[in-house]
Length: 191
Image (cartoon, helix red, strand yellow):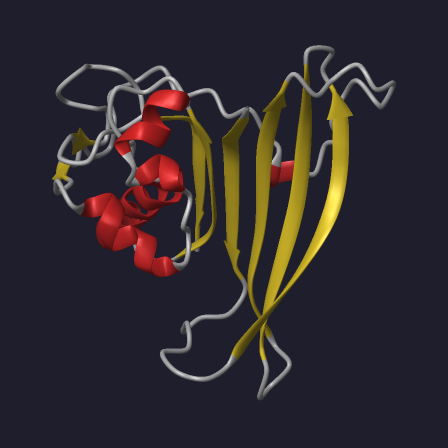
């Protein structure tokens, strides 16, 4: 019943440290009542323990189907880039990148600590309404962020709305095999 809907990442410190101890502090930002569903937005601030400097700031939005109707606020707060709707410009893209994922991409991404069985267990995926396990949204978010970084350089922040599913082995950015969007409402603020 939980869908990862949006992700926002702000890089607070360049160069990004390649070693050290990072500590992350989560907090609940808001819970919005959409009637049939609830929208929960949380934030995580990550600091370098040795220096106390902020390195990353993330916001995650999840949709909880069947959890609305509790009388909470009906509209989410506007927090600028992290909540912007971001319509694509009406012109040709500046760059088109294709990146083929691997069949074992979800199993490898699982090593990051996301142990949701939806991404590796066929039986669990079927219970969630999928024919096979699906790729983590944060995995293809990372692939998109890497493509932007390689073509345009460092960015201040990146925001996406997860618009569809990606199966391990499919090709991004738009899912080449289906023609459907994986990410929509996205934007990057370059440095």
